Image 1 (cartoon, rainbow, N blue to C red):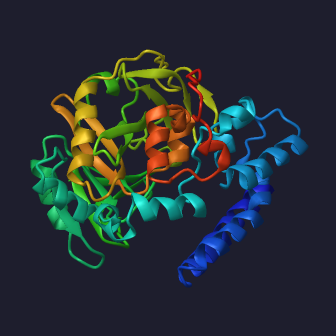
Image 2: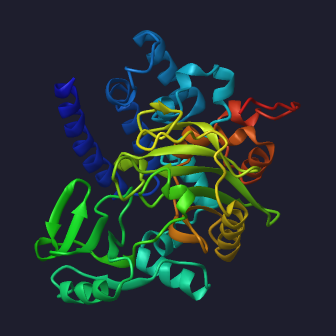
Length: 396
């Protein structure tokens, strides 16, 4: 098994290089080449993405499922494990939108609701911060934007000596998935930088790309009781053609152990949120689709846990979407403090497959399906017919 994961990492490396090469080619050929590349990557999905410790179906049945998703539902089946599709009837699969990074979805989204020319406004954290600050949205205090080879360490020390929490966060301005986010803290014997399980002195710390330095947020005590990490709500919204803001889905993310970040790709877990009630759903999931009824560190049960200030979270997300009306589908990572929700990040390309793994299939909500249909975002015949002449309510 270790040997398989070793080869999986090697394949990952070359896959990324090939994708970068394809992206540099003519835009008219990129979707077709990406689709071919995704087809060639199906064995990788079968071997390394499917969680065989959880999936009890035969390998033959799983391969048939993956081919069905690829050719009939028209997206790469990397949500097969995340959403535990092997447990669900195929009739329910039509309500899953799947990965937005697949060529069919990506092409439609960029044409209709996520114009590529605006992505930089959200992908660069410094630019996005300035836009949100101008709009007077609640934000953590941002002290510095630092660059490699600059003398920034003395400035960080000065900030920490007057910071009431003795902690700062440094994160790459163009980073994703919690990668390279570090926690800087002032302790009795010096200032230290922590990255995941590694702890070094500030003097040893080096950045390799433009990064931002922000205050470490003190989250709401009820959420801190579940996990001490800065736990955030991921909420995704769409501005419809009628200029209504609808929520596609939401989930809560929690760190594990003494982690200071909650990203699922960095080892955290996510739990779907009942949007109407503002309560957590019954089961949480990690990136491999493993299930949790309680938080593995605190032991607190997820089901019906009431999120504090939920109405304010919903209101803020809708305000942000209306403000950035030229970009019609956005995701937000919001921390909840005693004073209300605070924007941690805005995501130009939120992971809908990851959202669906915790929240459930987004197209089961008729208003979401109708909005996607109006924007011509539905990519396969099954999804296009999902609500025609029907009034289906799926079990949540």
